[in-house]
Image (cartoon, rainbow, N blue to C red; front, side):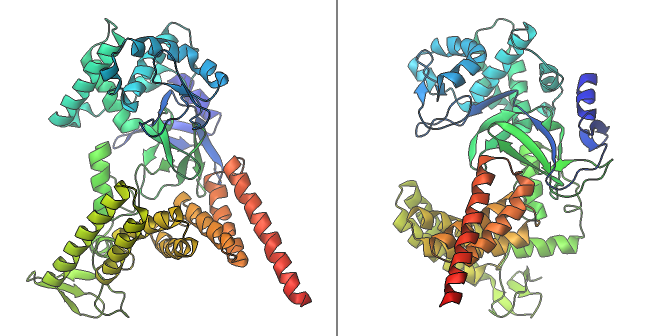
Length: 481
């Protein structure tokens, strides 16, 4: 790994092995908020193609697509993208073309990712594709696989997937055990590739980026520019500090976050947010996942009584009956399930009505900063926008922002994107000065998380400048009157 260390040294970085974490990425110089720490092209990647949506295998574009005429699995938006991928796709194409029609349905993005990984390894070993210090199979081999911690059910699944890969490639030197081990590597190390608005596009393996460890209070953020993974500092990182990103959604209680990390990555987080007093942990869970006080004027949190008959507000002392809570929670689940069914059948009007009923009940039951209430409002925002009910969409957007500001640090891409959505809605509805404020908030956050060179950020800056010009024009017109 000497070549990797040399490449990282040039960027002010180094890899250090920590007893409790294994390989970790540390800084050897200062990094400022918004500064790019490291970027990497994927070793392999695949779009999340489905029966309803397809994307280009190279650039993930979703327009002007043509299916590969031989394998009928890969899609390309142009001859340029197809030629760029041909060295890798040629072998994959031959293997997939041998499959019968029924088997094609089993070729999921995960299966393709593994197939591409082995093909790239083969082509690099044969020097058909060049290797570099940050692009070689040894970096993949060094990634942890957690095979010893996987339950039997998951091992059986990996073995079944490995058998399919073996059938597709038909390479005598391959065996199912090796393939299963690589599936386990991907489960722990692959990243979801998203667009600038954090909508998932595909999956990629970035072996150097995978060295970066998790924190629930990270000092850096991972975003994607096309299919390139880019890590930027979200705060000042001094020389000698560990670089950290978040592997999971951090808007949740310590218990919820730890459960997600254990299930998906097989470790327990010991960051400063997770290592807290038991009293603080109980309070956090009660606010984010618990119930509200019966007194509308009180914002206290509730804890279960010692006799298990109800929940007592820790601020004003009012008690909520256990049966009352159980009854409302049951109604919420029933109506929410109906709303999900309506969404599945694309009945947006009915889904909106059902989720509004859900929200009304959650406002009675849940703490104002409840995660479940926030998630319902996120759904209401999305449905309202699909129905082009901009006024209602703006209402729910503002309600979610107030909770985001409580749940996330000041510099977080989700908070910035929510301000961006708010600005678009305000401008659409003619609230120009409000739009300027929201766009400014969005830009101040996203210029740090996303940089300023992407087409998305250039478009945001253009919107901000146009909104400012419109607000200035309206202001001067009012003065003239």
